[in-house]
Image (cartoon, rainbow, N blue to C red):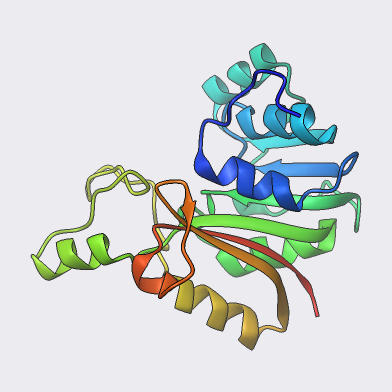
Length: 199
């Protein structure tokens, strides 16, 4: 079902493919609420966003998205265990300082988690680093001096992180220009989308 609404980012459709119809969804760092709006229209979810930025909260309200203002770095103590079916962190993981705590909190508050992040191991990023520059791309659009990113990682890094902490990867979808990448994803994939749960 499309309802005339097109996703703004390639990861929206990948996320929606894993979200069961009618689920309860918490979107962390929800921005203007576009993902929740998309999931509501495509998957009939009931959703809540968490955002800290005043302008983004106002955009959520204009978008018809339920949102609360909170700092993710302080954790998710306002939410009870298993109060959502899915907790989503879409292209926000690399901007948080306490990545491991956020992932653990996602699995406490939600039955399952979905995270998306730019793959620092993508070949175009590697090429820019080899040329002596920090990468700038569609998924990493900031210059080194104004970037909100504090913890960039590769697909291999994230999978090792999950394996060492007993986090079960349910599904993975690696994208480049909106298309799934099967061959050498850590080299050819620009954006990683993971669906995970507790072991």
